[in-house]
Amino acid sequence: MFNIVPQPNELIITGGKTRFVLDEETVITKMPFIDEFRHFIKQQFDIRIHRDSQATENAIRLELTDEADSDEGYRLVSRDGCIYIYARAENGLFYGLQTLKQLLLQGNGVVPDLYIDDKPRFPYRGFMLDSGRYFQPVSEIKRLIDLLALHKLNRFHWHLTEDQGWRIQIDKYPLLTEIGSHRSHTNFGLRPEGGFYTKDDVREIVDYCHRRFIEVVPEFDVPGHCVAAIACYPELSCFSRKLKVATHWGVKHDILCAGKESTYRFVFDVLDELFSLFPDKWMHLGGDEAVKMRWKLCGHCQDVIRAKGLKNEEELQQYFMSRVARYVYEHGFTPIMWNYDGVESVDKLDRRIVWQMCGANEENGIVRKELAAGRKMINASAFPYYLDFPYGWVDLRRAYEYEPGISENILGVEAPLWTEYVPDQKTADKRIFPRLAAIAEAAWSAPEDRSYDRFEEGLPEYFDLLNAYHVHYATLKQALPGKLRGKAQSLWFNRRVLHWQGLHNLIDDARVEAAHKNDRK
Ligand code: ACM
Ligand code: ZN
Figure 1 (cartoon, rainbow, N blue to C red):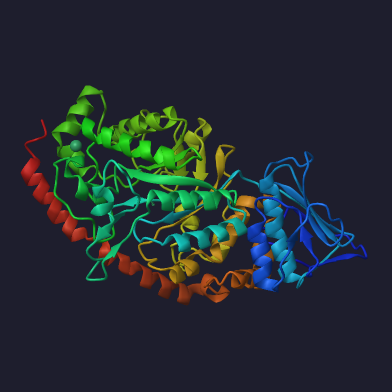
Figure 2: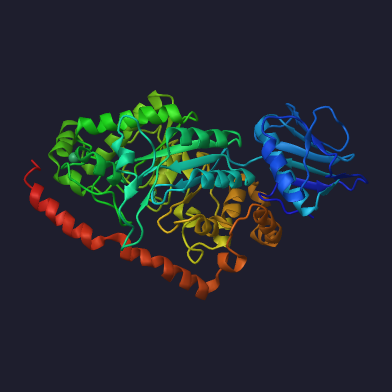
């Protein structure tokens, strides 16, 4: 029996007498996306599969048909010594090849007569990488993208701007990368850190994704998480404060001023350059963890609250997000934001903004109410989908068993990797795998077919697949740690509290309060 991840909708060993045998004579239909499959076969079997669109013996035949009922679905048939993959679109054929990799690996190059009918549950199946807290080289991102495609994920959400680092070249504001992409140290005396993506790097990543049927969702996080930008252009903040690129983790109290027109000009200028780099028409605007301390004291912000008839700073954030979102969809892009802040009541928040659910505001019923009112959402609930959480908080079973489809308006699923504690690829691997497989099944497989026990039984084959990609995954013992080991993992993780600079924030707030309490009219 085969263990394919994510679990296909239907897999039947048909019991025929023939079988497909991979060897030096095997050929594959010419298609623009087959090289990564051929590369995999070369790596794993040392066999070079030739391209031939006519052969009918010992062939992997890829055929576009109109019988499949979804663009990403496919049927895979092993019969008469050939593999046939049928799909309505190239994505489906590509996913058929991802399945075929696993069949070949598990069958050691031999596939018995079988039949697979498969299609995804959700159209949005994402992974988020935080390149703000730590910069990852292009080569590492490409490797991750290969792994996303292997799991039949189709969205790469790229978190590019943070308090601790601005990572993308913007021609109109060169300081963003000259100054904003480096920090002097990390937490208490740890190493300096820096790096950014040139526009050519970005185009290279986007193209790499497209050749794997992955759309790219860039994130420009506003109005919070902008200390690196403020360090370059102080006038973006309420009191034009001179700050350094943040060196400690935690939620910062200096955010973009929502009262100055110059802030909106900056945001729109940056968006203009992002529009031309990201053709998939998604634009994530962040919106999370926007602490309102400065806005309460700022004359500019208070003027806008009065002039627009807003109730409070919460509604000022809704005004800010809605205005920026309007700019985004007027350019043909879909705006997304975290459902984290500025959403206690949503009277002033544009319904065309897609919410990325991270769990905030779930308990008070706003998520359900908004879903019922028609707002689209991507389910990225922190518990259990934040990949950076220790397995002691979210073990593999919990990640697997969570049911994301809480409404018709859920577009799909996303697993974010925040990187405060993920400085390198090896650590990233441990956090992502095997949890990503559990989440990929929630995104792809039919809900009635999902079973954790079956999933766990298939892990040895899944780990073999990861070995083929040289992934430093967490073992089952690490991913399902039990009480004691889980406690140890959590304790280790909780050292983050020390890095939150709570005391520094308090002192700084008092200083700002003393200097500016008279600005408030
Ligand atoms: C978030 O967790 N900052 C969205
Ligand atoms: Zn302000």
